[in-house]
Image (cartoon, rainbow, N blue to C red; front, side):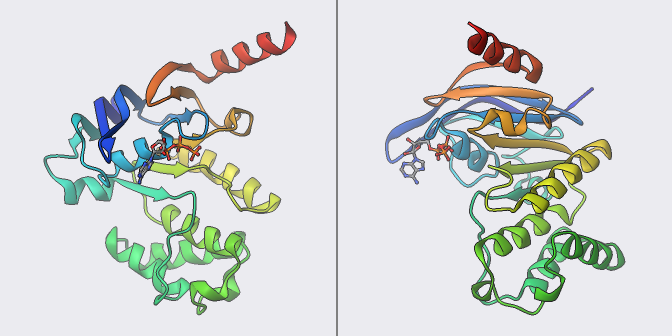
Length: 232
Ligand SMILES: Nc1ncnc2c1ncn2[C@@H]1O[C@H](COP(=O)(O)OP(=O)(O)OP(=O)(O)O)[C@@H](O)[C@H]1O
């Protein structure tokens, strides 16, 4: 079995402060890995480094064996990303955002239109297609952002704090949809500071503390540890 994502000896500094201190981990194909840690542990920074938003001090990052350093334009088509806070463009309508994603990932038009219908209906924003982001509530903007990332068939989905700002129904739908897409072959890396929210979804975990890996393993081992601590 190959790896959907490989992070090797990643080191990164922001404004002369070393934030990520030589971390290595991988997401095997078809698995869901949770990057866990307290506020400020370095989860979002690691995710942004994977996407190439920060210059690395050292290290290598591969998605499906493709190096971030060798062919960045192709590398970018291998993942999609759901940020913690929506990053929508003020000058584009909801539908135009979906079209932009469809074009960026060179999606077949019929598949794109079907998915737009399916996801906007499930997330109950089918009547918002002509709206601009400023006319939407924060939760609605998060739904639009989430749909954008779910439209293409990418090998790797990156999610920074899933379910942030979503209501109970949307959270349950996303949970089920992530499981379904994972069954179809999509690997997922997500961050969370609340382990209990993602235990049911994930196969593996990496625990970050102060920019270093404190622990890693199968998710059951992590739950076992916390349960033992509670029992004692
Ligand atoms: N743009 C930036 N400029 C300066 N420092 C930054 C910047 N981005 C992150 N940091 C610092 O890097 C460290 C890790 O931040 P990061 O956002 O990766 O943490 P996190 O684990 O995602 O936390 P949270 O759970 O709060 O989202 C923190 O000490 C933060 O202050």
